[in-house]
Length: 259
Image (cartoon, rainbow, N blue to C red; front, side, top):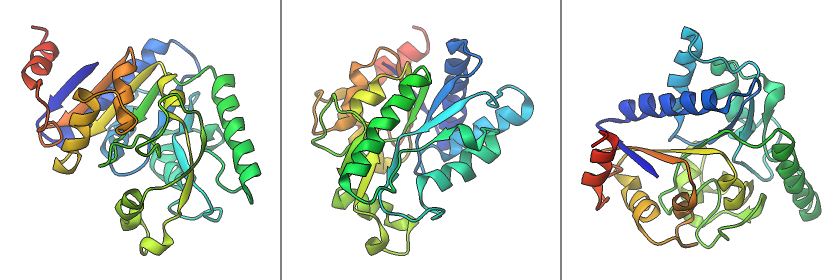
Protein backbone atom coordinates (compact mmCIF):
# COMPACT_ATOMS: atom_id res chain seq x y z
CA UNK A 1 0.00 0.00 0.00
CA UNK A 2 1.17 3.51 -0.82
CA UNK A 3 0.53 6.13 1.88
CA UNK A 4 0.86 9.78 0.85
CA UNK A 5 0.66 12.51 3.50
CA UNK A 6 0.10 16.09 2.35
CA UNK A 7 -0.08 19.33 4.34
CA UNK A 8 -3.70 20.35 3.67
CA UNK A 9 -7.01 18.98 2.38
CA UNK A 10 -6.51 20.99 -0.82
CA UNK A 11 -3.18 19.24 -1.36
CA UNK A 12 -4.88 15.89 -0.73
CA UNK A 13 -7.49 16.65 -3.39
CA UNK A 14 -4.87 17.61 -5.99
CA UNK A 15 -2.67 14.59 -5.36
CA UNK A 16 -5.58 12.16 -5.22
CA UNK A 17 -6.88 13.52 -8.52
CA UNK A 18 -3.49 12.84 -10.10
CA UNK A 19 -3.56 9.27 -8.78
CA UNK A 20 -7.07 8.73 -10.19
CA UNK A 21 -6.12 10.16 -13.59
CA UNK A 22 -3.02 7.96 -13.72
CA UNK A 23 -5.09 4.91 -12.81
CA UNK A 24 -7.67 5.54 -15.51
CA UNK A 25 -4.93 6.09 -18.09
CA UNK A 26 -3.21 2.87 -17.02
CA UNK A 27 -6.43 0.94 -17.64
CA UNK A 28 -5.96 1.61 -21.37
CA UNK A 29 -9.66 1.14 -22.05
CA UNK A 30 -11.74 3.35 -24.35
CA UNK A 31 -14.59 3.08 -21.83
CA UNK A 32 -12.95 3.06 -18.37
CA UNK A 33 -14.94 2.42 -15.21
CA UNK A 34 -14.61 4.65 -12.16
CA UNK A 35 -15.98 3.77 -8.73
CA UNK A 36 -17.60 6.73 -6.99
CA UNK A 37 -17.82 7.50 -3.28
CA UNK A 38 -20.14 10.10 -1.77
CA UNK A 39 -19.99 12.11 1.44
CA UNK A 40 -17.72 15.07 2.12
CA UNK A 41 -14.36 13.28 1.76
CA UNK A 42 -14.16 13.14 -2.06
CA UNK A 43 -15.67 16.56 -2.84
CA UNK A 44 -12.31 18.30 -3.26
CA UNK A 45 -11.10 15.41 -5.41
CA UNK A 46 -14.13 15.72 -7.67
CA UNK A 47 -13.52 19.45 -8.00
CA UNK A 48 -9.93 18.75 -9.08
CA UNK A 49 -11.11 16.15 -11.59
CA UNK A 50 -13.60 18.68 -12.96
CA UNK A 51 -10.70 21.09 -13.46
CA UNK A 52 -8.78 18.38 -15.29
CA UNK A 53 -11.77 17.80 -17.57
CA UNK A 54 -12.06 21.53 -18.26
CA UNK A 55 -8.35 21.76 -19.14
CA UNK A 56 -8.46 18.70 -21.39
CA UNK A 57 -6.28 16.49 -19.17
CA UNK A 58 -9.17 14.09 -18.53
CA UNK A 59 -12.05 12.94 -20.71
CA UNK A 60 -14.81 10.90 -19.07
CA UNK A 61 -17.36 11.06 -21.88
CA UNK A 62 -16.88 7.36 -22.62
CA UNK A 63 -16.52 6.32 -18.98
CA UNK A 64 -19.00 4.57 -16.72
CA UNK A 65 -19.41 5.27 -13.01
CA UNK A 66 -20.54 2.92 -10.25
CA UNK A 67 -21.62 4.27 -6.87
CA UNK A 68 -20.58 2.48 -3.71
CA UNK A 69 -23.98 2.62 -2.06
CA UNK A 70 -27.47 4.07 -1.85
CA UNK A 71 -30.03 4.66 0.86
CA UNK A 72 -33.13 2.49 1.02
CA UNK A 73 -36.51 4.18 0.96
CA UNK A 74 -35.76 7.71 -0.25
CA UNK A 75 -38.20 8.84 -2.96
CA UNK A 76 -36.94 9.30 -6.51
CA UNK A 77 -35.30 12.69 -6.90
CA UNK A 78 -34.63 13.18 -3.18
CA UNK A 79 -31.67 15.60 -3.00
CA UNK A 80 -29.76 13.34 -0.59
CA UNK A 81 -30.19 10.14 -2.57
CA UNK A 82 -26.76 9.23 -3.83
CA UNK A 83 -27.97 9.13 -7.42
CA UNK A 84 -28.96 12.79 -7.14
CA UNK A 85 -25.76 13.68 -5.28
CA UNK A 86 -23.59 12.10 -7.98
CA UNK A 87 -25.62 13.66 -10.79
CA UNK A 88 -24.86 17.06 -9.22
CA UNK A 89 -21.28 16.53 -8.13
CA UNK A 90 -19.93 14.19 -10.80
CA UNK A 91 -22.01 13.87 -13.95
CA UNK A 92 -22.41 17.57 -14.62
CA UNK A 93 -18.96 18.87 -13.62
CA UNK A 94 -17.01 15.89 -14.98
CA UNK A 95 -18.97 15.29 -18.16
CA UNK A 96 -19.96 11.74 -17.18
CA UNK A 97 -23.09 10.78 -19.10
CA UNK A 98 -26.05 10.35 -16.70
CA UNK A 99 -27.04 7.12 -18.45
CA UNK A 100 -23.59 5.75 -17.63
CA UNK A 101 -24.01 6.40 -13.91
CA UNK A 102 -25.00 3.26 -12.02
CA UNK A 103 -26.27 3.37 -8.44
CA UNK A 104 -27.56 0.48 -6.29
CA UNK A 105 -31.34 0.30 -6.34
CA UNK A 106 -32.77 1.28 -2.97
CA UNK A 107 -36.35 1.61 -4.20
CA UNK A 108 -37.44 -1.99 -3.66
CA UNK A 109 -40.73 -2.40 -1.84
CA UNK A 110 -39.63 -5.47 0.09
CA UNK A 111 -36.51 -7.40 0.98
CA UNK A 112 -36.78 -9.75 -1.99
CA UNK A 113 -36.76 -6.84 -4.45
CA UNK A 114 -33.80 -5.22 -2.70
CA UNK A 115 -31.82 -8.47 -2.66
CA UNK A 116 -32.56 -9.04 -6.33
CA UNK A 117 -31.44 -5.50 -7.12
CA UNK A 118 -28.18 -6.04 -5.23
CA UNK A 119 -27.42 -9.17 -7.26
CA UNK A 120 -28.20 -7.27 -10.46
CA UNK A 121 -25.73 -4.55 -9.43
CA UNK A 122 -22.97 -7.12 -9.09
CA UNK A 123 -23.80 -8.33 -12.60
CA UNK A 124 -23.66 -4.80 -14.01
CA UNK A 125 -20.17 -4.29 -12.58
CA UNK A 126 -18.98 -7.59 -14.05
CA UNK A 127 -20.52 -6.82 -17.44
CA UNK A 128 -18.72 -3.46 -17.50
CA UNK A 129 -15.40 -5.27 -17.10
CA UNK A 130 -14.92 -4.37 -13.45
CA UNK A 131 -13.93 -1.10 -11.81
CA UNK A 132 -10.60 0.39 -12.91
CA UNK A 133 -10.23 2.98 -10.13
CA UNK A 134 -12.36 3.01 -6.98
CA UNK A 135 -12.51 6.26 -5.00
CA UNK A 136 -13.07 5.73 -1.28
CA UNK A 137 -13.67 7.70 1.88
CA UNK A 138 -13.56 6.26 5.39
CA UNK A 139 -16.08 6.62 8.19
CA UNK A 140 -15.10 7.63 11.70
CA UNK A 141 -15.91 4.06 12.76
CA UNK A 142 -13.84 2.60 9.92
CA UNK A 143 -16.74 1.89 7.59
CA UNK A 144 -16.03 1.61 3.88
CA UNK A 145 -19.01 2.35 1.70
CA UNK A 146 -21.78 1.42 4.11
CA UNK A 147 -19.96 -1.68 5.32
CA UNK A 148 -20.23 -1.14 9.05
CA UNK A 149 -17.98 -2.78 11.67
CA UNK A 150 -18.72 -6.50 11.70
CA UNK A 151 -19.16 -6.74 7.93
CA UNK A 152 -17.74 -9.88 6.33
CA UNK A 153 -14.44 -9.14 4.60
CA UNK A 154 -15.54 -11.12 1.52
CA UNK A 155 -19.05 -9.63 1.38
CA UNK A 156 -20.81 -8.70 -1.86
CA UNK A 157 -23.42 -6.04 -2.67
CA UNK A 158 -26.30 -6.43 -0.21
CA UNK A 159 -28.84 -4.72 2.04
CA UNK A 160 -27.48 -3.51 5.38
CA UNK A 161 -28.73 -1.67 8.44
CA UNK A 162 -26.89 1.58 9.15
CA UNK A 163 -25.25 1.96 12.54
CA UNK A 164 -26.49 4.67 14.90
CA UNK A 165 -23.12 6.38 14.60
CA UNK A 166 -23.30 6.54 10.82
CA UNK A 167 -26.86 7.86 10.92
CA UNK A 168 -25.83 10.58 13.36
CA UNK A 169 -22.78 11.43 11.22
CA UNK A 170 -25.01 11.76 8.15
CA UNK A 171 -27.80 13.67 9.87
CA UNK A 172 -26.08 16.92 8.86
CA UNK A 173 -27.21 16.26 5.28
CA UNK A 174 -30.87 15.92 6.35
CA UNK A 175 -33.30 17.98 8.42
CA UNK A 176 -32.65 15.72 11.40
CA UNK A 177 -31.74 12.23 12.54
CA UNK A 178 -35.31 10.99 12.07
CA UNK A 179 -35.06 11.71 8.35
CA UNK A 180 -31.92 9.61 7.85
CA UNK A 181 -32.79 6.19 6.40
CA UNK A 182 -32.10 3.17 8.58
CA UNK A 183 -31.02 0.86 5.74
CA UNK A 184 -28.92 0.97 2.60
CA UNK A 185 -27.72 -1.11 -0.32
CA UNK A 186 -23.92 -1.18 -0.39
CA UNK A 187 -21.18 -2.79 -2.38
CA UNK A 188 -19.54 -5.43 -0.22
CA UNK A 189 -15.94 -5.38 0.90
CA UNK A 190 -15.21 -8.22 -1.50
CA UNK A 191 -16.79 -6.18 -4.29
CA UNK A 192 -14.59 -3.19 -3.44
CA UNK A 193 -11.49 -5.37 -3.42
CA UNK A 194 -12.24 -6.50 -6.99
CA UNK A 195 -11.42 -3.01 -8.28
CA UNK A 196 -8.03 -2.79 -9.99
CA UNK A 197 -6.93 0.27 -8.03
CA UNK A 198 -8.19 1.78 -4.77
CA UNK A 199 -7.73 5.44 -3.85
CA UNK A 200 -8.66 6.41 -0.28
CA UNK A 201 -8.92 10.09 0.67
CA UNK A 202 -9.18 11.30 4.26
CA UNK A 203 -8.76 14.67 5.95
CA UNK A 204 -9.17 16.03 9.45
CA UNK A 205 -8.52 14.83 13.00
CA UNK A 206 -11.89 13.08 13.18
CA UNK A 207 -10.60 10.44 10.76
CA UNK A 208 -7.22 9.88 12.45
CA UNK A 209 -8.20 6.90 14.62
CA UNK A 210 -10.02 5.13 11.78
CA UNK A 211 -7.13 5.73 9.37
CA UNK A 212 -4.61 4.33 11.86
CA UNK A 213 -6.75 1.25 12.46
CA UNK A 214 -7.30 0.71 8.74
CA UNK A 215 -3.69 1.10 7.63
CA UNK A 216 -1.73 -0.20 10.62
CA UNK A 217 -4.13 -2.24 12.71
CA UNK A 218 -5.01 -5.90 12.27
CA UNK A 219 -7.05 -7.03 9.30
CA UNK A 220 -10.40 -7.29 11.03
CA UNK A 221 -14.12 -6.97 10.48
CA UNK A 222 -14.04 -4.55 13.42
CA UNK A 223 -12.47 -2.04 11.02
CA UNK A 224 -13.92 -2.71 7.57
CA UNK A 225 -11.45 -0.33 5.89
CA UNK A 226 -8.59 -2.57 7.01
CA UNK A 227 -9.31 -4.64 3.87
CA UNK A 228 -7.21 -2.06 2.03
CA UNK A 229 -4.20 -3.95 3.42
CA UNK A 230 -5.27 -6.93 1.29
CA UNK A 231 -5.26 -5.02 -1.99
CA UNK A 232 -2.28 -5.12 -4.35
CA UNK A 233 -2.70 -1.53 -5.61
CA UNK A 234 -4.14 0.74 -2.94
CA UNK A 235 -3.16 4.35 -2.28
CA UNK A 236 -4.18 6.34 0.81
CA UNK A 237 -3.95 10.12 0.39
CA UNK A 238 -4.15 11.89 3.75
CA UNK A 239 -3.67 15.31 5.26
CA UNK A 240 -1.50 15.83 8.33
CA UNK A 241 -4.45 15.66 10.71
CA UNK A 242 -5.84 12.40 9.33
CA UNK A 243 -2.33 10.89 9.42
CA UNK A 244 -1.60 12.01 12.98
CA UNK A 245 -2.20 8.56 14.47
CA UNK A 246 0.14 6.65 12.14
CA UNK A 247 3.16 5.01 13.77
CA UNK A 248 5.11 4.39 10.57
CA UNK A 249 4.99 7.92 9.20
CA UNK A 250 8.76 8.16 8.60
CA UNK A 251 8.65 5.05 6.42
CA UNK A 252 5.71 6.32 4.38
CA UNK A 253 7.40 9.68 3.81
CA UNK A 254 10.67 8.03 2.77
CA UNK A 255 8.86 5.68 0.39
CA UNK A 256 6.93 8.55 -1.18
CA UNK A 257 10.19 10.43 -1.68
CA UNK A 258 11.73 7.39 -3.38
CA UNK A 259 14.38 6.92 -0.69
